[in-house]
Structure formats: structure tokens, C-alpha cells
Image (cartoon, rainbow, N blue to C red; front, side, top):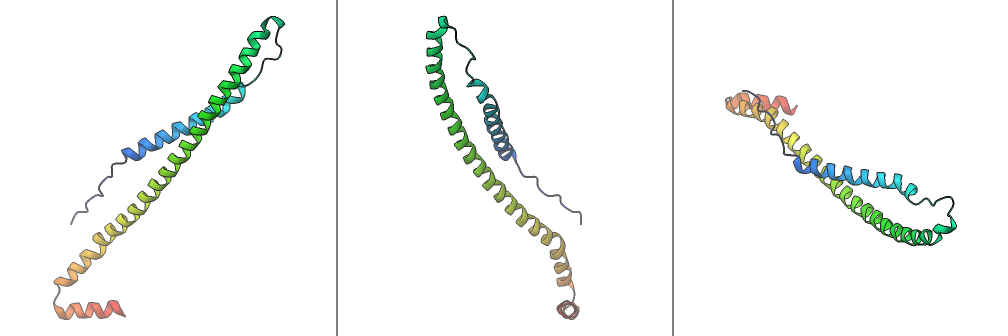
Length: 133
């Protein structure tokens, strides 16, 4: 009897979630790398550019607040996505373990039991006694 291959599961949803998670974490990492460089102040401010520098500082504080809010929201979203991905991975792993054990039972022990059932009663009893010892 030829062995039937395992059915392949469609993992496109899992792959899409993993890619999204990768981009979210990558974006947060890139932002955290460039964030200190964006907040650096110029070394010296000329007197003629004093008004412009004052405007730049207030705009910079406002931008920093907005960026901090975006970072916080991104971290919250990343935590949620990571939690969901972990739950999904655990669910898939537990389902796969059950499927594999069922497959092994169906392909190994079930045919043996079927063959034993085809034997005459007297030989079935001998096999049962041998197995139970």
C-alpha cells in the first residue's frame, strides 16, 4: 500500500503576519537609531539667526512630542502583534503535534490491527496473549 503524503497547509496568513511584524520591528529599530541624530542642536547660533533658531526650537519640541507619540503607539502595536503572532505559533504547533500523532497511528498501528482482525479467532487470541504479557 503506497504511503500518502501529508497535505500541505496554507501558511500565507502566517507569512504575511511575520513580514508585517518584521517591518514594524525594523521601523522601530531604524527610528531609534536615527532619533538621537534628529534631536541634536546646532553647536552655535548666529545673532542674525536668533529668531529663526527660536522658531526651530519650538517646532523641534512639537515635532519631538509628535514623534514620541508615534513611537509609543508603534511600540504598543508591535507588542500586540507580537502577542498575537506568539498565540498563533503556539496554536499551530499544538495542532501540528496532534496531526502528526494521529497520522503515525493511522499509518502504523491501524493497518496492523486490521490485519489481526482478518485472522481466525484462535490466532487473534494467541496474538492478544503475546502482546499482553
